[in-house]
Length: 168
Picture 1: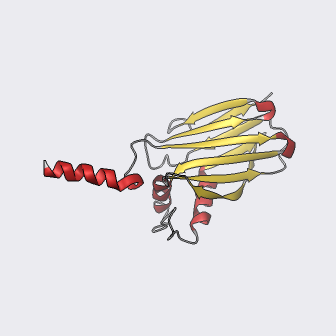
Picture 2: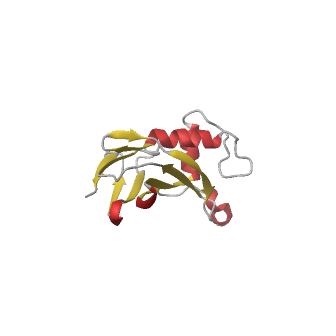
Picture 3: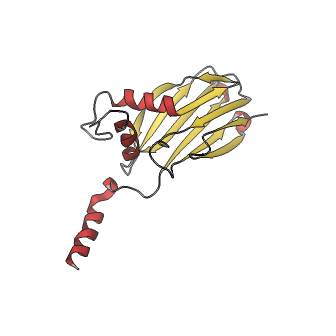
C-alpha cells in the first residue's frame, strides 16, 4: 500500500518529465500568397527530440532549460532539415531557421521555419520522418494551407513517410 502511494505521488509531482504514452509531431505548412512565402510551424515534444539528437551523438543538450547547450539550435536545425523535407515542382527547397520557443506546458517546442520567394505552388511533396527511427508508433501530422486557402492533411507513420499535395 505504501509503495503504491509513493508511486502515485511520484507521478503527480514529476509533471512533464514523465514520458508520454503517444509519439506525435504536428507541422503546419502555410503558403502566404501576398508575401510568396511558405511558413512552417513544427510542434514536437522536447524529450522525444532530445532522444533523437542523443542517438545522433549529441548528449547533455538540456533542451528547453536554462542549461540548454549553446549548439542546441544548430543540432535541432540539422535534424529537422534531415527529416522534414519539402520539394516544390520536383525541386527540393531549403528553409530558413527562424527560431524555437518552449510551449506553455514546457513539454514541447514550437519550431519556426521559412521559405521565401516561393512562386504559387502546384505540387508540394512533403516527406516527414521525424523521430520514426526511435518510435514504432510515431505519427507526424502535417496540415497544409495552400494558395487560395486550399487545405490538406497528411498523417505520416513508419510505412507512409511522404506524399504530394496538388493545388489547383
